[in-house]
Amino acid sequence: MATTLPSLHSLLITTFLLSLASLFTPSLSSTDSFVYGGCSQIKYPPNSPYESNLDSLLTSLVNSATYNSYDKFTVMGLSQQDVIYGLYQCRADLSMPDCATCIARSSVELDQICGVCWIMRF
Image 1 (cartoon, one colour):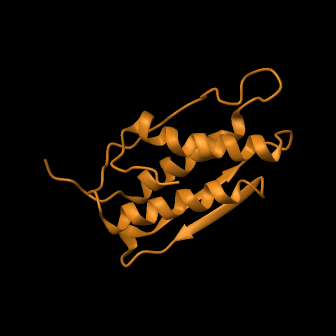
Image 2: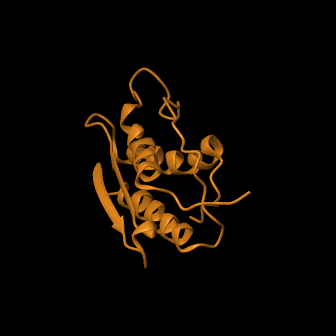
């Protein structure tokens, strides 16, 4: 089975999934409740530049959520196919520790939900 590098479409889906963290309701439900997941069928080869960039992006998102309720990142690659965009936004009524926890859990759940070809290294 041949593997192909993800398109901008799959990058947007990944970004969308991470941004769903803002939909968790801290007052009436658990902050670790999952709301929705949408996954691309496109995979990428292990140990590729894209995988390295994805690890870098997710690490940046998780680290930033400790200090900011919103942030965005672009990780440049050697080719346009390796460029990754990501963002998150937590609701205004979510505390910073809960925001950081939510973003960290969301990034880990990507693998469980979508079965993508990478391992988180935090």
